[in-house]
Amino acid sequence: MNEMITITVAEYQRLLAAAEELADVAAFDSAKAALADGSEELIPAQFVARLLNRESPVRVYRDLRGMTQASLAAAADVNRVQIAEIEAGRKTGSVETLRRLALALGVRIDDLV
Image (tube, rainbow, N blue to C red):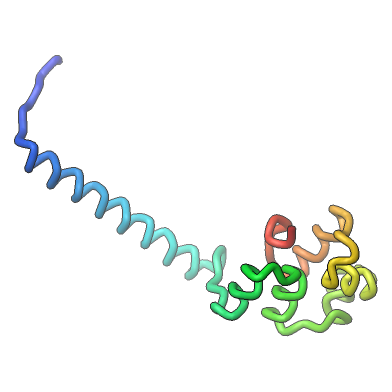
């Protein structure tokens, strides 16, 4: 079972390029499927820019979802003042508070910290 085959460098490079293209197609198909089944979402560039500019992720995702602080507070069973403090950067929020906010916003807790 120690059979070997010899190919040219050009053929090896062609096969390598084809394998890379196949991996790209698989990644694309996976991303499209995740968008279709709702496990991933597209975030508009303006919201991504706000996150990159280090604006409070709680505020950015709250705005993305069209929620007020009061509606988020009700959905997460968290005091509205806590949300205001977190968004202003005066407090970080406990793990439990962030867990509740993440659940209400439909994001992972990692997205908020």
